[in-house]
Image (cartoon, rainbow, N blue to C red; front, side, top):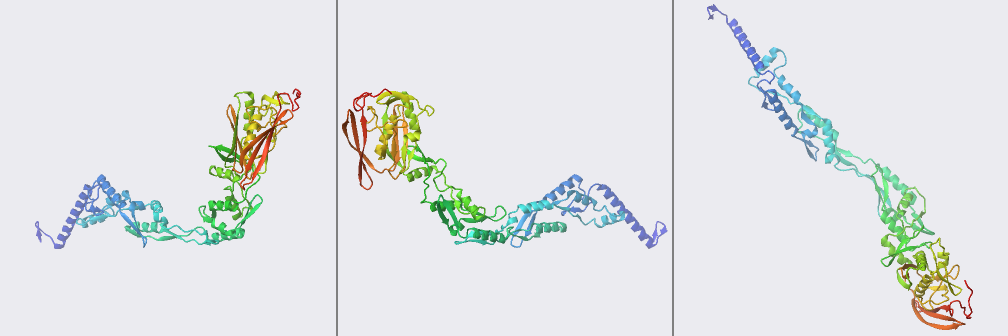
Length: 556
């Protein structure tokens, strides 16, 4: 071939063309590389979108969008009978943006210069995809899975002890079910590695009870050995038996503490024991009452208790069941609640007002202080059936240390002063209350001189050690004595259950030497219809300082 005046052979021409083409390609590559310095080459794509020629800021924005898309994509966990859906980010899947950026910039810039030129030339018309670099945070995945409701889809049923209607029996537990976190984490990790995590497989995990069935068997066997014949309970000297069947019916089990424990239905146990001793009453009580809105309310028993039963009997029974205490169980009594107070009072027979008497006096004399003091001491005293109240024995000597002062008295038929003077007004008032309550008054003495503020012939005086005033409770019910006063009066009330209907049946007045003898008759009609007549006697001197023979009495 003639060319430029020279003859070129065809092979040489071909080589020249190739060299020229190579030089052109290298030059084009070099200029393209310089044009995209710090940027991806043309035709480079990320997540199916071209990123060639993007500057670093735009490339970082594109990577952030890809990361957001990946993080908000859905990952399905296939459990066979359940399909769980999570956001990829919640399972710890994310995009390593820095590594992905470096990978995008490295496309066409690795290997020898010839390899770079060749790759550049071959892909001028083809996209060069960049793989997104994924990350996986196992801790995030585990946290998300632990918080999922199906982590414990079905809790294990622990072994238990239950009453089957006859005895206490052990009941075997059953395993629960939950998602197997380890299997899901491993599957997600593999999916991220394989770049296929839209759907992964997981497994269910069987969750056994941490409490072995043998523990329930052992607990039931121990209880059966200890109380299979029942429990003996004691109130005072009275013994009663709680059979095993009701005992077992109060029992159930709990595993809240991590082991099997027996618990009692305390309310049922308490009610059973209360019913067991419903007919038993402690006789060694000293009941105390308060008056509330005119009703006697049971207030206290001092050091003893009278209501069966204290709730403390429940842990005492439990202690025997658990082998922590021995039989018999001494049933503790308790004081009544407010709601029970009136019922307890009525059980004693202290239910309503059966008699009341008031006497009046002038205000503000020193004797009034003595009247109030003895009324305070007697208030709330309870006379049990068959028992009596001796005022001198109960109140004791009237002294200044005991709150009494000097006031008027009658001594040897003459008016005088002494510590405790004036309390005979209280004696007369309680005497009359007892008279109309139908109580016996085996020991009393009237004033030796009649005083007009007292009922004629139906009154009493007091001194220490004599004369005394003694009141017997011959009724089958307790009698509560309640006192109250004003500046000008003293009142004594007696609360009990009405028993005898009392009427005053008249008086007879006669002479006893120079003295006047007054006999006051009383009729008591009892529930069986029988009527008993008795009387009280008062003897009055003819005047101050005179005896029943009309002679002067010695000066006190």
